[in-house]
Structures are given as C-alpha cells and as structure tokens.
Image (cartoon, rainbow, N blue to C red; front, side):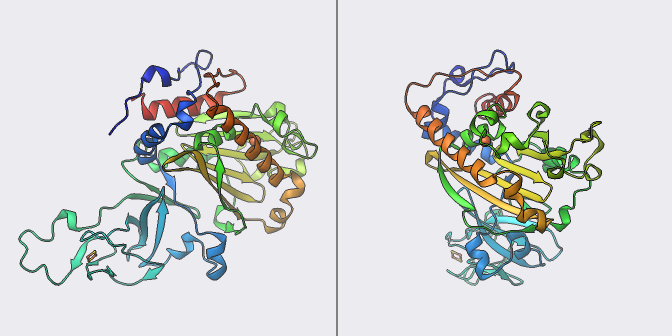
Length: 388
Ligand code: FES
Ligand SMILES: [Fe+2]
C-alpha cells in the first residue's frame, strides 16, 4: 500500500538560497526508500553491475565481453531483480526478466549462447527477442500463445564498456541522460578502456544511497575531510573547482596543482583550456540518480550507490576501474591517496548516518556558492518522488 507523504515536509525549493535539504526521514524511512524504488529507480538509466573480481578470476571476461557475441546471454541482478542480458542475432543488446512466463522458474542459469532459451522447469522455449517459440502440452489452449507468454523487454543501452537498463519507462532518453558526459570527453581513448578487477569492488556500507551521492556532489567538504597532506585537497587548485549542472547529469572538475597530474589539453574539449597552462585533474560526473563516472588521465573509475531494498540505512557501493593507460593507472595512488580519500568519505558517511538517525537532525540549508551540486540532487529527488 502506498504510504502517504506530506509533500511540504519533503519539499526542496528550486531556489538554493531558500531551499531546505530533504528531511532526515528521507534517509531512514523504509517507505520513502520504497517510493524511490518505485519512482526514481524505475524511470532512470541504471548501470547494470559488472561481474565481480572473484567471478573474473575464473573467467576474465567483463559483463560487456560476455555478451559481446551474437546470441550470447548472461544473468544479471539489478536492485535484487533477476534479469538477463541477451545479444540478439542481429547484434542488438536486449534485457528481459529472468523469469519464465509459464510458472516463473529462472530461465538463464549462467553465461550461455544458443539459438533458443529453454526453461529448465518444463521446457518452454524463447528466441533471442524474448518471443515464445514452443512448448509441448499447450496445443489445445485457445488464444495461446498470447502477449503475456512472451518475455517483456526492458530498455537497454550500451556505451563504451558500460551496460545500462531501465526497469520501467525512462524519464529521458539515454542520449539525453548521457549526452553531456560524452560531449565533455573530447578525444579521450574510450575504446581502449580495459577493466581492472580489484578486491573490494562490492561493499555494503553504512548510510542511505542519497548520503553517498550527496557526499559525491559536495565540494564543500574537500578542504575539511580530505585535508591530509598528499590527499585530495592538496592535489587540486581548489579555487578553480566548478560544478556544472547538465539536466540529468552534473559535472565537477578542477585544475591540478601539478600539471603532470592533469589531462593532456589536446584530448579534452577547448572549453577546458587554461590561458595559464593549468591542466584538468579530473572530470567527475554524477548521472542521476546513483552513477558516478570519474575520468582521470589513466582512465575511468565507476562508482554506483545502489540502494538496498528494505534497508534504507545501507548502500551497496560498487567501484570498478577501467584503464586506458596502464602505467599511469599503476601510479594513481602516488598522485593523490585515492584509497585514503575513499576511507575518509566512508568514515564521514558513517558519522552522518548516525546523525541522520539520531532524531536530533533538523533540515539543513545550502551554502549558495558551495552547494549547487547537493541542492540539484535534493531538488531532483524531491521532483522525481513527490514533486510531479
Ligand atoms: S516454468 Fe518455465 S516452462 Fe514451466
Ligand atoms: Fe569526499
């Protein structure tokens, strides 16, 4: 049953100077998480989680590699929902519920490649477009097969080595969501990206998924939380730090203190050129609601803040590295203490999580010049849950 929410209690004003943050209840109330899962997470493009490093030890292929051949398919799980990805025989990528239309057995048990999908329970067969093909025993059923006997497709998209699906009707097209990201990447060698499996790519962390996305959008905390010598605040020209809002996505970027740690300006669009020769340290994109794409001179670090259904105070944190420059990738910890910075954020989120749940947390305000990113995120969450 739909819980009733008082819209006023959750309202985030379009004006940053006037706006209050979302209330603490939005971060701890299971009913609000359910609402988000039914609204935001059914109308947004979500990254389909890649295979884990442990899975890749046995078979080094990434998920994108696994479904690259025509006819190939693989089971995946998105927000606890069982899906499978299918490369059809014409080369298109498709996604379907991994649930048989007869009596709901799991259809695809593991990576596979064959003309038809055969359900292990009673042998119903489907083609690579999810259409029912045959099943003995239904010869005398009028009107069979009907529309409900075919698998109902989800919308999917692929970009570089990343695969996306939408669990409902997308609020915006994939091109509208990801277009600004692509336009910012100039001539970076995306085709050369190679997945670098690491331990700890999947962790369940304290804190609601929004806390982590908020923290990601929060440049205000960098000189405080990441002030350790050799850390993030030291690596950046903080005065150059910018937040740009681009509809479904938001970009943060800054120049590096040491030009050796920045991008080759010839690879990025002209708008990032600096008359003083400074170089861009990173392009940090948040694609609403929960995908962070972090571009560095060595390649791409992907973070996903995945809600855990039923557990509003926990987040499944996914972290994948894809490198196009293996040498620079190997030295990334010497540029700034990537792992330390991650741990500083994890600790901060644990503390904020305690504050959120304390019963003492009032709704906050946003510092207009510092917190455009957090305000954009809160406002968008309000609009996509209760504001419509
Ligand atoms: S559940 Fe698939 S054929 Fe019966
Ligand atoms: Fe941080």
